[in-house]
Image 1 (cartoon, one colour):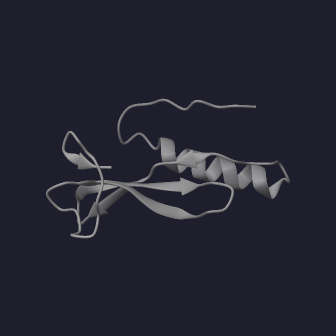
Image 2 (spheres, rainbow, N blue to C red):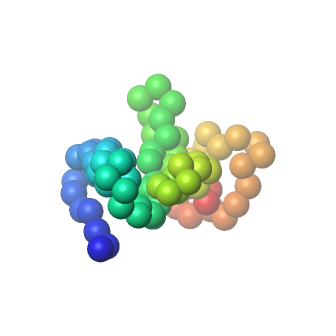
Length: 82
């Protein structure tokens, strides 16, 4: 089964996907895929991470160029470094 989850900004899509994948895994279903949770500093979005649902590994995906750490290198796309 494949799912595509859509919704308004800040409507809880990532939270729902995390909970649903945990629920399925607890019932011995094979679960895989990635999520891109936002990263915030105080109340400001500063970027996104990528989360592998199966392994639970997290890596930085993109950061707002104006606040990116000096060692965060990549291509600039709009206001983000990816």
